[in-house]
Image 1 (cartoon, rainbow, N blue to C red):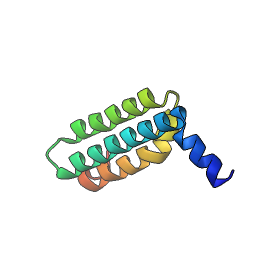
Image 2: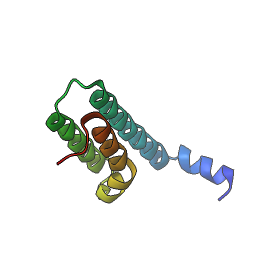
Image 3: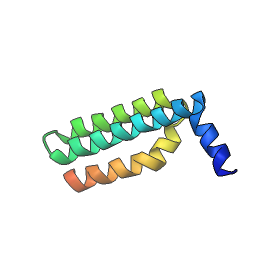
Image 4: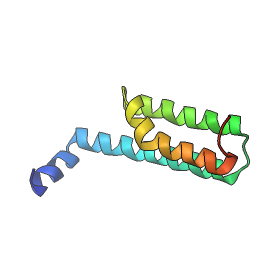
Length: 88
């Protein structure tokens, strides 16, 4: 794929829509991490936040549960462990 082809795809309506959905998901994951790291929520609430972000990912990208678990789930699980310790 050439640079011109990639730019044409990204500028297409489909490319813009996907870019927007990726942006929204990334913002949700960043917000979840910041909220959990702030330490003002219980572990149960933090886990609920992670579940809500996973649900949002599924809304934005249907069928993406496995991809979310690999890309963002690992990151958020690590944050939970760093803030609350390993789960029982």
